[in-house]
Image (cartoon, rainbow over all chains, first blue to last red; front, side, top):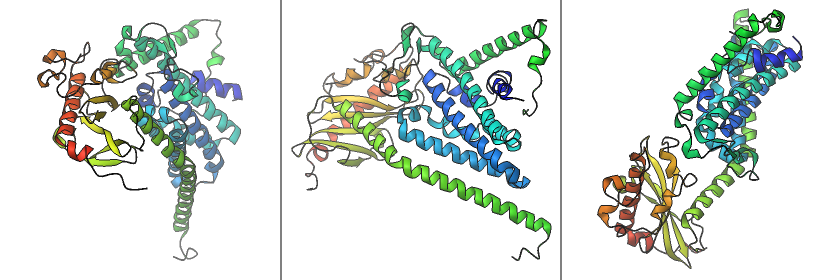
Length: 228
Length: 217
């Protein structure tokens, strides 16, 4: 599997959010705005790359009995480091993400990539896989976050100044007045409904591709080394 | 234990334990280093945020002390809304207390307690109110946030006599304060908490405003 396949795997074919449905809790809870989605996605991405790197370097040398325990320790340390850094340098975003930042430690995506992929792969491929899977998760968060924020508040990128600095005015782009927004899109049921719609669209697209003779089956070949 | 005399299984277990311990130490060191770097900045930004909140709630009131350092602890489950002691800040000009900042809790929010910061001057007038923390429904109850609407400014300049006591309520309850479409519980809770905070200030005016001078520098 070359680099392109790894990237495609993480971003599309085995997208953690939309295909593997891993990390649904943070995906649904923190996708109520682009700013939150971007913040949590980037934090998860950083943790994934770091834990994949350590798993790839240390994995082969770890006794089988404690391998999982060591990975959990590594992930917990990485998450704590990311959380502390965020509290120090992006306090607004840290407050906005709240409990879901430390809860990255329980995101099964991170442990799954470390245990089932990175531990038996060389460092560059483990790094690339962490990057691809992290970007895939970020993409899923952003897709949900953008559609929920647009439907619910009529805006895109409000509060982005928490992440990017004060030169952004924190309003983002306003498509229509907030008062005309569809409130349910911001609430948990809206997250479930929109995720369901996106999954249905994705499935329909995949089915159409399978039926179309122009798309050779090899392009969607089964990917070795993937969990579940 | 002498590992040379132990069986291979025991050696294996010891090796695994040693690896796990090494990993734990490495993780501890990493987190400590990051914590050391981050802690001063976290403290500074927390302080800056508190100061910004205090300044915002005081409006253009002039003062010359550091309210963050001039604190007292108040506890009144009935009027301040929680069993916990709450920090209050004195705001002084030339040694005289010109306002107090009360932390108060509206225990009866729609989705749990709402934490408020209420600034009251010596005449018992509200200088400003801000919501510090809440879990009200986004789009409905969060109109109490200053960045969402200016509803919270409806308290500015009010006191226990203005409006009269029986009109310190939302309109639906026959009072003077607006509720929001689809959300009455949230503004009702906030109005009640602000009124109770004012009652608290009235009852404890002497100790809040006539207290001893701050310790000499």
